[in-house]
Amino acid sequence: MTRAVGALARATHPQPTLAVTAGAAALALATGRDGPGVAAVAVTVLASQLAVGWHNDWLDTERDAAAHRPDKPVARGEVSRRLVGWAAAVAAVVTVPLALLSGVPAALVATVGLGSALAYNWPLKFTPASPLPYLVSFGALPAFVVLGRPDGPAPPWWLVAAGATLGAGAHFANVLPDLDDDLRQGVRGLPQRLGRPASTAVAAGLVMAVSVLLTFGPAGPPPVAGLVALGAAAVILAVGGYWQWRRPRSRVAFRAVLVVALIDVGLLLLAGSLV
Image 1 (cartoon, one colour):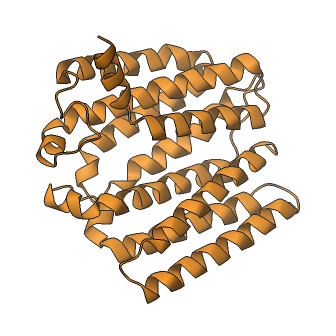
Image 2 (cartoon, rainbow, N blue to C red):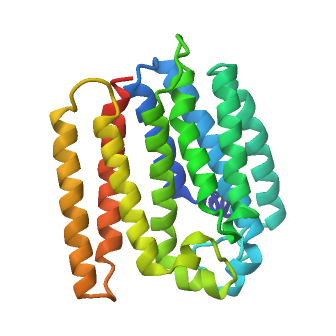
Protein backbone atom coordinates (compact mmCIF):
# COMPACT_ATOMS: atom_id res chain seq x y z
CA MET A 1 0.00 0.00 0.00
CA THR A 2 2.75 2.44 0.99
CA ARG A 3 4.68 1.56 -2.16
CA ALA A 4 1.62 2.22 -4.35
CA VAL A 5 1.03 5.60 -2.68
CA GLY A 6 4.66 6.55 -3.27
CA ALA A 7 4.44 5.48 -6.90
CA LEU A 8 1.21 7.44 -7.33
CA ALA A 9 2.95 10.53 -5.92
CA ARG A 10 5.86 10.12 -8.34
CA ALA A 11 3.42 9.88 -11.25
CA THR A 12 2.29 13.45 -10.58
CA HIS A 13 5.50 14.91 -12.09
CA PRO A 14 6.32 16.19 -8.58
CA GLN A 15 8.97 18.78 -9.44
CA PRO A 16 6.93 20.90 -11.87
CA THR A 17 3.79 20.29 -9.80
CA LEU A 18 5.36 21.68 -6.65
CA ALA A 19 7.16 24.47 -8.52
CA VAL A 20 3.99 25.75 -10.23
CA THR A 21 1.96 25.44 -7.00
CA ALA A 22 4.57 27.29 -4.95
CA GLY A 23 4.91 29.96 -7.64
CA ALA A 24 1.13 30.51 -7.74
CA ALA A 25 0.94 30.78 -3.95
CA ALA A 26 3.85 33.24 -3.93
CA LEU A 27 2.16 35.32 -6.64
CA ALA A 28 -1.09 35.32 -4.66
CA LEU A 29 0.79 36.61 -1.64
CA ALA A 30 2.56 39.26 -3.73
CA THR A 31 -0.74 40.50 -5.20
CA GLY A 32 -2.24 41.01 -1.75
CA ARG A 33 -4.36 37.88 -1.26
CA ASP A 34 -4.88 37.16 2.45
CA GLY A 35 -4.02 33.87 4.14
CA PRO A 36 -7.22 32.03 3.15
CA GLY A 37 -6.90 33.46 -0.36
CA VAL A 38 -3.35 32.22 -0.73
CA ALA A 39 -4.42 28.80 0.55
CA ALA A 40 -7.32 28.73 -1.94
CA VAL A 41 -4.93 29.46 -4.79
CA ALA A 42 -2.47 26.81 -3.61
CA VAL A 43 -4.99 23.97 -3.28
CA THR A 44 -6.65 24.81 -6.60
CA VAL A 45 -3.41 24.90 -8.53
CA LEU A 46 -2.15 21.78 -6.76
CA ALA A 47 -5.30 19.85 -7.70
CA SER A 48 -5.07 20.95 -11.32
CA GLN A 49 -1.38 20.05 -11.51
CA LEU A 50 -2.09 16.62 -10.04
CA ALA A 51 -4.78 16.08 -12.65
CA VAL A 52 -2.49 17.07 -15.51
CA GLY A 53 0.44 14.97 -14.28
CA TRP A 54 -1.60 11.83 -13.69
CA HIS A 55 -3.45 12.29 -16.98
CA ASN A 56 -0.13 12.57 -18.81
CA ASP A 57 1.27 9.34 -17.35
CA TRP A 58 -2.02 7.53 -17.92
CA LEU A 59 -1.93 8.48 -21.60
CA ASP A 60 1.80 7.88 -22.11
CA THR A 61 2.09 4.50 -20.36
CA GLU A 62 2.89 2.53 -23.51
CA ARG A 63 5.39 5.06 -24.88
CA ASP A 64 7.12 5.38 -21.48
CA ALA A 65 7.36 1.58 -21.23
CA ALA A 66 8.83 1.32 -24.73
CA ALA A 67 11.41 3.97 -23.83
CA HIS A 68 12.25 2.17 -20.54
CA ARG A 69 11.75 5.38 -18.58
CA PRO A 70 12.99 4.74 -15.00
CA ASP A 71 11.11 7.80 -13.70
CA LYS A 72 7.68 6.55 -14.80
CA PRO A 73 6.09 4.33 -12.13
CA VAL A 74 3.01 3.53 -14.22
CA ALA A 75 5.11 2.23 -17.09
CA ARG A 76 7.22 0.21 -14.64
CA GLY A 77 4.15 -1.46 -13.17
CA GLU A 78 4.61 0.08 -9.72
CA VAL A 79 1.08 1.46 -9.75
CA SER A 80 -1.87 0.46 -11.92
CA ARG A 81 -2.77 2.55 -14.92
CA ARG A 82 -6.43 2.35 -13.95
CA LEU A 83 -5.75 3.85 -10.52
CA VAL A 84 -3.78 6.70 -12.06
CA GLY A 85 -6.59 7.36 -14.52
CA TRP A 86 -9.17 7.55 -11.74
CA ALA A 87 -6.87 9.78 -9.68
CA ALA A 88 -6.57 12.17 -12.63
CA ALA A 89 -10.35 12.29 -13.05
CA VAL A 90 -10.97 12.95 -9.35
CA ALA A 91 -8.31 15.67 -9.21
CA ALA A 92 -9.79 17.37 -12.29
CA VAL A 93 -13.31 17.33 -10.85
CA VAL A 94 -12.14 18.58 -7.45
CA THR A 95 -10.32 21.51 -9.08
CA VAL A 96 -13.61 23.23 -9.95
CA PRO A 97 -15.12 23.57 -6.44
CA LEU A 98 -11.69 24.50 -5.08
CA ALA A 99 -11.43 27.22 -7.71
CA LEU A 100 -14.86 28.55 -6.67
CA LEU A 101 -13.29 29.50 -3.33
CA SER A 102 -11.77 32.39 -5.30
CA GLY A 103 -15.08 33.40 -6.91
CA VAL A 104 -16.92 32.53 -10.09
CA PRO A 105 -14.83 34.61 -12.56
CA ALA A 106 -11.59 33.17 -11.17
CA ALA A 107 -13.04 29.65 -11.24
CA LEU A 108 -14.01 30.01 -14.90
CA VAL A 109 -10.46 31.05 -15.76
CA ALA A 110 -8.96 28.21 -13.71
CA THR A 111 -11.23 25.70 -15.46
CA VAL A 112 -10.16 26.99 -18.88
CA GLY A 113 -6.53 26.68 -17.80
CA LEU A 114 -7.05 23.09 -16.67
CA GLY A 115 -8.87 22.12 -19.86
CA SER A 116 -6.12 23.66 -21.94
CA ALA A 117 -3.41 21.72 -20.07
CA LEU A 118 -5.29 18.45 -20.51
CA ALA A 119 -5.65 19.21 -24.22
CA TYR A 120 -1.87 19.47 -24.44
CA ASN A 121 -1.51 15.91 -23.16
CA TRP A 122 -3.81 14.85 -25.98
CA PRO A 123 -3.96 15.71 -28.80
CA LEU A 124 -2.04 19.00 -29.11
CA LYS A 125 1.31 17.62 -27.90
CA PHE A 126 1.64 15.88 -31.28
CA THR A 127 0.80 18.90 -33.45
CA PRO A 128 2.36 22.23 -34.48
CA ALA A 129 -0.13 23.84 -32.05
CA SER A 130 1.71 22.35 -29.04
CA PRO A 131 2.67 25.79 -27.57
CA LEU A 132 -0.97 26.92 -27.51
CA PRO A 133 -1.99 25.16 -24.26
CA TYR A 134 1.06 26.61 -22.51
CA LEU A 135 0.10 30.09 -23.68
CA VAL A 136 -3.47 29.64 -22.47
CA SER A 137 -2.80 27.84 -19.18
CA PHE A 138 0.11 29.97 -18.02
CA GLY A 139 -1.72 33.12 -19.06
CA ALA A 140 -4.74 31.92 -17.08
CA LEU A 141 -2.68 31.40 -13.91
CA PRO A 142 -1.98 35.06 -13.02
CA ALA A 143 -5.49 35.98 -14.22
CA PHE A 144 -6.96 33.43 -11.78
CA VAL A 145 -4.84 34.80 -8.93
CA VAL A 146 -5.80 38.44 -9.54
CA LEU A 147 -9.49 37.82 -10.23
CA GLY A 148 -9.78 36.04 -6.89
CA ARG A 149 -8.91 39.15 -4.89
CA PRO A 150 -11.79 40.62 -2.86
CA ASP A 151 -12.12 43.62 -5.17
CA GLY A 152 -12.04 41.32 -8.22
CA PRO A 153 -9.98 43.61 -10.48
CA ALA A 154 -9.35 42.80 -14.10
CA PRO A 155 -5.85 41.35 -14.45
CA PRO A 156 -3.49 43.74 -16.28
CA TRP A 157 -2.72 42.74 -19.84
CA TRP A 158 1.03 42.74 -19.30
CA LEU A 159 0.78 40.26 -16.41
CA VAL A 160 -1.33 37.83 -18.43
CA ALA A 161 0.93 38.28 -21.47
CA ALA A 162 4.03 37.65 -19.35
CA GLY A 163 2.51 34.48 -17.88
CA ALA A 164 1.54 33.21 -21.33
CA THR A 165 4.94 34.00 -22.83
CA LEU A 166 6.74 32.38 -19.91
CA GLY A 167 4.63 29.25 -20.42
CA ALA A 168 5.51 29.08 -24.11
CA GLY A 169 9.19 29.56 -23.28
CA ALA A 170 8.96 26.79 -20.70
CA HIS A 171 7.45 24.48 -23.33
CA PHE A 172 10.31 24.99 -25.77
CA ALA A 173 12.95 24.68 -23.01
CA ASN A 174 11.33 21.63 -21.40
CA VAL A 175 11.29 19.71 -24.67
CA LEU A 176 14.98 20.20 -25.47
CA PRO A 177 16.51 17.44 -23.28
CA ASP A 178 14.12 14.77 -24.63
CA LEU A 179 13.74 16.06 -28.17
CA ASP A 180 15.44 13.10 -29.88
CA ASP A 181 13.48 10.54 -27.85
CA ASP A 182 10.25 12.38 -28.64
CA LEU A 183 10.92 12.18 -32.37
CA ARG A 184 11.61 8.45 -32.14
CA GLN A 185 8.27 7.97 -30.38
CA GLY A 186 6.29 10.05 -32.86
CA VAL A 187 5.83 13.15 -30.69
CA ARG A 188 6.03 15.99 -33.20
CA GLY A 189 5.03 19.19 -31.48
CA LEU A 190 6.30 22.52 -32.77
CA PRO A 191 9.70 22.34 -30.97
CA GLN A 192 10.38 18.87 -32.35
CA ARG A 193 9.50 20.05 -35.85
CA LEU A 194 11.75 23.10 -35.59
CA GLY A 195 14.71 21.15 -34.21
CA ARG A 196 17.09 21.79 -31.33
CA PRO A 197 18.96 24.95 -32.51
CA ALA A 198 15.81 26.79 -33.58
CA SER A 199 13.84 25.73 -30.49
CA THR A 200 16.67 26.88 -28.23
CA ALA A 201 16.66 30.26 -29.96
CA VAL A 202 12.86 30.52 -29.65
CA ALA A 203 13.00 29.65 -25.94
CA ALA A 204 15.67 32.29 -25.37
CA GLY A 205 13.64 34.91 -27.22
CA LEU A 206 10.49 34.11 -25.28
CA VAL A 207 12.08 34.28 -21.81
CA MET A 208 13.76 37.55 -22.80
CA ALA A 209 10.39 38.91 -23.91
CA VAL A 210 8.99 38.03 -20.48
CA SER A 211 11.74 40.09 -18.84
CA VAL A 212 10.84 43.07 -21.03
CA LEU A 213 7.10 42.74 -20.35
CA LEU A 214 7.55 42.57 -16.58
CA THR A 215 10.03 45.44 -16.51
CA PHE A 216 8.19 47.92 -18.71
CA GLY A 217 4.59 46.68 -18.48
CA PRO A 218 3.56 48.12 -15.09
CA ALA A 219 2.61 51.78 -14.95
CA GLY A 220 5.27 54.25 -13.91
CA PRO A 221 9.03 54.17 -14.29
CA PRO A 222 10.56 50.68 -14.37
CA PRO A 223 11.99 49.61 -11.01
CA VAL A 224 15.75 49.49 -10.63
CA ALA A 225 15.57 45.79 -9.72
CA GLY A 226 13.70 45.14 -12.96
CA LEU A 227 16.27 46.97 -15.06
CA VAL A 228 19.11 45.08 -13.36
CA ALA A 229 17.34 41.75 -13.93
CA LEU A 230 16.67 42.66 -17.56
CA GLY A 231 20.32 43.47 -18.13
CA ALA A 232 21.40 40.26 -16.40
CA ALA A 233 19.01 38.23 -18.55
CA ALA A 234 20.42 39.78 -21.74
CA VAL A 235 24.01 39.07 -20.70
CA ILE A 236 23.26 35.48 -19.63
CA LEU A 237 21.51 34.67 -22.91
CA ALA A 238 24.25 36.32 -24.97
CA VAL A 239 27.00 34.40 -23.17
CA GLY A 240 25.02 31.16 -23.38
CA GLY A 241 24.42 31.65 -27.10
CA TYR A 242 28.09 32.39 -27.75
CA TRP A 243 29.30 29.26 -25.95
CA GLN A 244 26.66 27.19 -27.66
CA TRP A 245 27.98 28.43 -30.99
CA ARG A 246 31.52 27.55 -29.95
CA ARG A 247 30.50 24.15 -28.60
CA PRO A 248 27.40 22.96 -30.49
CA ARG A 249 27.12 19.71 -28.49
CA SER A 250 26.98 21.48 -25.12
CA ARG A 251 23.82 22.39 -23.20
CA VAL A 252 25.01 25.86 -22.17
CA ALA A 253 22.26 27.69 -24.04
CA PHE A 254 19.60 25.45 -22.50
CA ARG A 255 20.95 26.18 -19.02
CA ALA A 256 21.07 29.91 -19.80
CA VAL A 257 17.38 29.80 -20.75
CA LEU A 258 16.54 28.08 -17.45
CA VAL A 259 18.46 30.70 -15.44
CA VAL A 260 16.64 33.54 -17.21
CA ALA A 261 13.32 31.76 -16.65
CA LEU A 262 14.10 31.79 -12.90
CA ILE A 263 14.88 35.51 -13.15
CA ASP A 264 11.51 35.97 -14.85
CA VAL A 265 9.74 34.22 -11.98
CA GLY A 266 11.36 36.69 -9.58
CA LEU A 267 10.28 39.58 -11.81
CA LEU A 268 6.76 38.13 -11.92
CA LEU A 269 6.54 38.22 -8.13
CA LEU A 270 7.94 41.76 -8.07
CA ALA A 271 5.45 42.88 -10.70
CA GLY A 272 2.62 41.14 -8.85
CA SER A 273 3.12 43.50 -5.93
CA LEU A 274 2.39 46.41 -8.33
CA VAL A 275 -1.00 45.09 -9.46
